[in-house]
Amino acid sequence: MVVGGAVGGLIAGIFGVTCYVLGATNILGLVAFPAGGTGNLIWGCVASFAAFGVSAVVTYLFGFTSQQLEDDKNTAEAAKLAA
Image 1 (cartoon, rainbow, N blue to C red):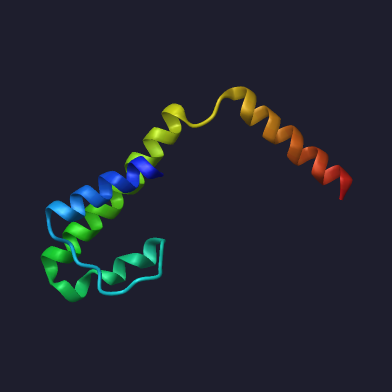
Image 2 (cartoon, helix red, strand yellow; image 1 turned 90 degrees about the horizontal axis):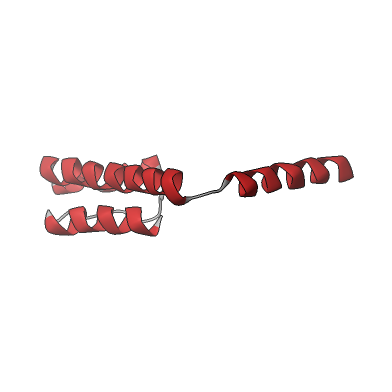
């Protein structure tokens, strides 16, 4: 997430994106950009989607090993049986 946030922040900084509302850290965060005009909205969306895309790719490439996923699955099953 840090790498994706850095890429999104770099794009937003280069193109002078201004955020007019703070709070939402999901898709609803896009409503923070329209007050700055069309260019601000477009570059805000580009920066947001770039941050999401880079985070997803980095997580896919380096995020989890097969052993970690298997351990998580076993832990979840054990918790379900204990409940």
